[in-house]
Length: 260
Ligand SMILES: Nc1ncnc2c1ncn2[C@@H]1O[C@H](COP(=O)(O)OP(=O)(O)OP(=O)(O)O)[C@@H](O)[C@H]1O
Ligand SMILES: [Mg+2]
Image (tube, rainbow, N blue to C red; front, side, top):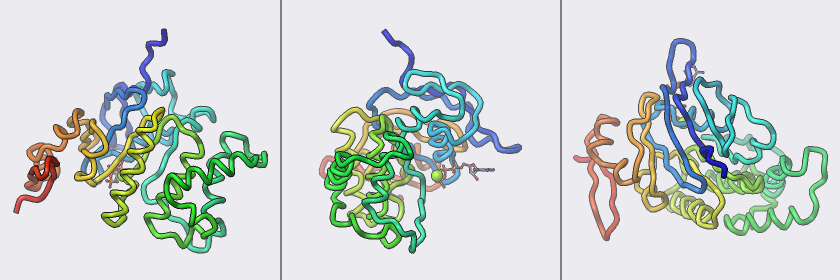
């Protein structure tokens, strides 16, 4: 029996010059968990995702998919990790359409110089159907709206067939309806099974509907790790964000808002 942890960070620290960006982070994530990561600007959320993605040098011990990892990832591991970076800008005139962008997600699976077979094209259309962007297939990616772009990038990531999704503020700058739609889509992908998700967000009110566990980071440390509603306690967040925040209930749902 394989008893090694699926994803485990043990005393992970990231330092840049004299600044400590992550300070001895300890974290275990089970296979197929859906975990939220919250915290103020500059808390170290993106850095944490970068450590897992293999984009950041660190001290400490990292286990991924049951194996001990150095800071870089080999091709096999990179393929298992679907990473949607924060604020991915695409130049307006970039001459690639949505279908072409989505198809690049398969490159890691088939190798760089292999022409994708037709079955991958069907896969791409299936994923675009799930994310409701088939109608955008021939549109240049540079002219997409923020929400359309995020969905196209998620579709590209899903083409990798990753075991893990790292989503860094995927709903930033999206209107409230598209935020909800995006969260619902990711929740749906999680429910389909076989994917572990770490999602960084500032959208507290959408968080609890999607996931049961949330981690609160502040100043490079894990301040709390538990059930989303315990993480989102008004008292706890007020302290960290240094503003009065209150949790209230309506129609069985709980919300966070400013107090006054
Ligand atoms: N190359 C660097 N040199 C020095 N400090 C850095 C460097 N890269 C990041 N930092 C600092 O590390 C801290 C954490 O950055 P990070 O991007 O992980 O924060 P975050 O929690 O994702 O914030 P946000 O909510 O704004 O996206 C910030 O204070 C940032 O300024
Ligand atoms: Mg960030």
